[in-house]
Image (cartoon, rainbow, N blue to C red; front, top):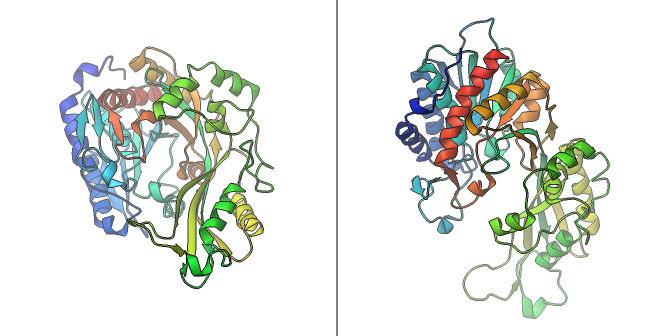
Length: 453
């Protein structure tokens, strides 16, 4: 089956209106107050797939349900499973949104809403791509959908779900669209994702908040102590100081470094895009190497003491920070978490007690770049963009990917439609209308090309 050019057959107004309906559902998986809305989003996706002729259901998990759907057209044809997630990040800080986060708005050719690019927009582009093919006749491959509601909290229920449904979830390839292309005019195939170790550091001082005049200079200050701890986690060359942190890192290959150096990247443009004047980081590595192929440690949140209007002169009894470590092939998140749990008490100043709490993690994954599925994806992207794809690794983490490889033993194919400038996880997240529509076309062509492989 080869349909030719599908662009003229795509009803863009209808595709956008449907996405808007999904974006209006505040499916924030991290906040129990939104639990009913998360379920509502899952049911919305299930109903859509059922309406397309799929056998679809909503499967319960201990937290949020999984949407599973299938359309099996011919056992002799390849089976493609399409993964995505319908849950989204919290909208906070709400005051920084120019328009309401759950009321999609178009400005300058971009759809602004929480989840517009991560991942409702990209996941729904894949759904609409399948629907576009169905308008032309039967699908060229067997298709399964696996759309979950916990990705933004580390997919804690999904490994048991995969184990319980292993036979049903068999496929020749799993397609994921949940990231960013290298640049606006550069179609991209992602062949690796970083892993993750996410912890929270708690520092305890006195048994209550203290008057800073009566106790300052004698009592331990948990906020000061936390700052000391954080400062000691990296040296002045940008290297992480946790003993053993780099022991298992698989170095970048010369071919990878040459390939990435050939991409049309500008440090100045990168700085301009985020409004900064310098790019601090690990010495000896380029910007792309730092964000794609090297491990990192970043403080994602910090708290302690009085933060209201005006002043309050206290020494806080407690302080804390949330810390994420992005990991590369060779590193194990459980080992890294244990290393930081052992290290932080060693560098904490006298007078405070510390605890490092493990939140969640994910394995780093890297795939070969010469498989038949990769070649099919390149042909599909060429039909949309008129050029071959670039190969990149992503700095982000998708914990479920390693589980797909380990439990299902299935090749994973990343074909992303978004851009870093979409600001996923940030206020004013957006998705270019053109990228959404090109994603729909790419999804349709990809199934055709996989059917021809």
